[in-house]
Image (cartoon, rainbow, N blue to C red):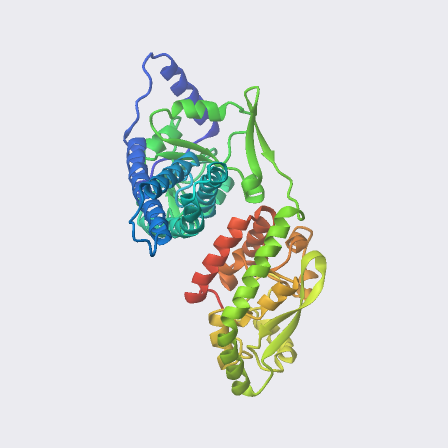
Length: 506
């Protein structure tokens, strides 16, 4: 990246005023530059690919439902069945379009994209069910009981596949918004650290404009980002780096019109102006925008830790834990024999953990350490490699040979599905802490105990023991306040991948 120069508050504001005044003096509307045009082109290509794959999935699902409903029939496929299949496919595709499931803002986002696809599918088949009741169209029954489940799964798998492709492309610098971050140094560094250096989240940071005098570069996690200087620094940074997105991490104090004038100044030079706020780290999906008499009000829904959604979570826990216990039963038998043969000790290890509202329970695990491991802990405390109150050793001498393999693939956690079935834990939630760890919590960290701990969660899929204590807490608190059923399903899916390609497990 070529270095450009840094920005002072007074000059930057004067520069914005000059730019907007000069533009207002002309009678010609701003024309799009190459950066937003390029962005529109690659967004259009992605939408076209999704539209083709969605159409193929829907068409095949509806056709398959029709064919399966006519098995054994000797009269061929009646025209009414073809018409109903075509109507189902059309309504389904219209619902996917109405719910903007191919919007650039949700493509590759994960849970938000999957939720929109599921909601669109639910709406389409809900309308079909109403038609079935009102008009008694017999062919719709086959679509409801065959095309709905098969098509929904196929659509979600298809979107997951496209998301994986998009992540790989973005890692190579393609199909990501070239982004310039504006604000104070602290807020800019936080925004860059959150967005990541690779563009995997859709934002490839290529430059910085600081609202303060500073060095020529901003360094975050070992990556240097050039800083622009001068009256027109923001506009020039967008042009120099061919940026299509400006992220405002913070704005000058006492200047309420800064964002408006910045938007005017950037007309034609960039595609999007994004306002970043640290509030989103706490509120997330609980935020909504409501304009009142021209004044945008950001509504933040106060989190609740009881109610209907928690009953849904409990139902999901029971369903998943029962399935997991049945599925892993043969593997568990092999593991039990291996543990017993290794050192002739007990198969299971019970440990006191702290659950929701500070209640203790006995968490069940396959034993991975020697029988006398607890008595050896005091001698190993000086070698602790964990962060915060956590105790971790990459090469813990107490771990048995079988235990090393179980920990690597997280198989030692399988008995915890019994804790989930009992109601002590949830499938997804914060990591269950030890009583000694809880005594070291401050007032903020105690919020991790507002919901049941989980077998897996953001900590499990986000790096496990490689994460710092602060990062682990931040991930857990974000989950506690913003979880959804779709988030839980996504984390379960990601956990399966982590078990196959383990990182940070020791």
